[in-house]
Length: 80
Ligand SMILES: [Zn+2]
Image (cartoon, rainbow, N blue to C red; front, side, top):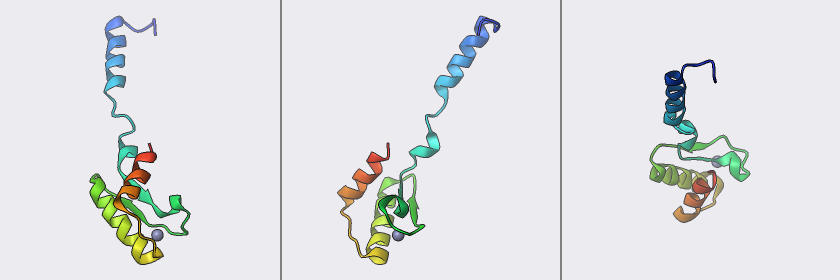
């Protein structure tokens, strides 16, 4: 880094701090595949409540498995 003038170094630092941390990976998402289903269904929405209701509906209708909203919330939180 020594070959950069110091004002540039601080610019580079500031820039890397301002990057959104894995912005797109933070989108709440539930994938059937992640729970052992041979199924391409993915519920994905910035609104976590929509992900939960979409996945809950799909799981119940397609796989006959009813998850509680609390369990689905846990699934999403554990994806870290
Ligand atoms: Zn499915």
